[in-house]
Length: 312
Length: 274
Picture 1 (cartoon, rainbow over the protein chains, first blue to last red):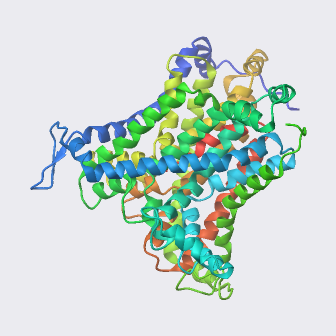
Picture 2 (cartoon, rainbow over the protein chains, first blue to last red; picture 1 turned 135 degrees about the vertical axis):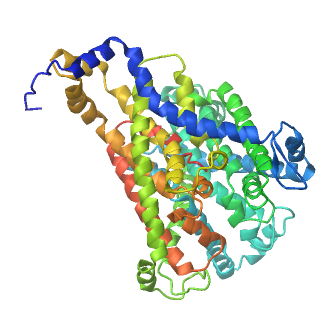
Picture 3 (cartoon, each protein chain N blue to C red; picture 1 turned 120 degrees about the vertical axis):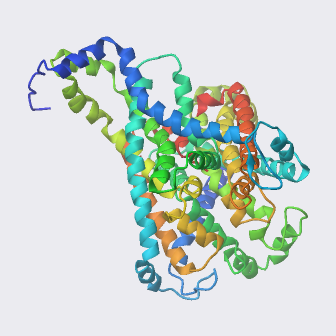
């Protein structure tokens, strides 16, 4: 800086800042006040009202909410039909998470241990751009791909592999008339949308593995496969778990993907949306919303034990 | 690692295949924006045309939605920058009781699925009889954008050494001068990057918005409607392409502003509220 600044004048402000300088606790309090008020009142306050509503119930005759404490709504939540929704969502979240980990690992491994310089930047942006690009556009792209007259069917026809596609679609439960209205379709799109969230933490974890550990394993006579299985993967596990927090949580709450690509059977997000909207059953919607909170809480506790938070 | 820095072919192929899987679907959008087919999603396109760009340009509903999205994103970003920076300043400044809890509180709106944030806000608005408006959309957006700015700012605060500020005081600068000439220049790019990401996040957000928007349409809400009940496919194709281009710019910008430092800070930021 070339300019010489005028020395600070001893004004009332200077004196106020002197007080702040001597009492850092006060500064922190004042700094935190606005964000804590915002998050505390708007976010936590709303979350609390939601939780509260799940302990009310709906009157079967009038269809109005009865404001008295009851566990009736939770009993309804565990009825077979609703429990199916929960189970289906959790299974889908598990499948998406596991598959994301498998696809993410080679990308992360290459980016962390081989890519250098420009290549590294390319890999980084190659993950960041899809991560940040529009969620709806991504879903829209898959709607185009999976459509009857879309690119998948076109490829299948010109390569003459329609028998393969048909046999995949004829698998009971997860198959269907076409990819866009089957669980397979829902699964592919969810996997696509959330995969980048898995890659980055795994890459970060792999980057932290010291080279000399791998060299030592090599020097001691381990095959590359053994090194991968016994050294690399266990050390990368916290990263995988950190990534799985995102893929799992995001899949649990998604209601747009299954609505646009998938069968008519509901997921938790859709149930919340439907119950609070047309059905007007806010207590049941609230109870459904509690499920991901509880599942994620359990998941986070388990993840913390595995040391995943250090990898975030 | 027998061969020091050489990857196996299999690893290379699966890494590249993975990246292609991430990128090809988005590229497809660009082809569809120029297709002459307007009734179905036919591939390959029977012909290419620029017609739909003009058609989309003359659509008032698209412009209205775009305008609302830009307004919401701008105001939410400003709120997020102020609140996120304050929070980061406090948390980085010292170790005080409960700072873990504050980090958790900031991250919570994106760690929990967006539908929970959305329905919570909606039920709170209902109970308090707050009518849906642009303001309610902004309330929701600013809440989950705070974390983006917070993550960027806290990484930068950690890199600014405290002795720099003390030196400034020792040399006779006032608190304002210290803020203006020491803190702000050091913090600037991080806040700009955080702000850009917050803007991209808000511009693209749909789940929380469906619960807090009432009758108003942001661009993502407009797109969602088209996805559920396609009426004007060609216009949707063009809008999708524009959205891809518009969101890429702030992301690339944020990357270039922060690439030398806090690269791994950003992955947490877009657990975006889904």
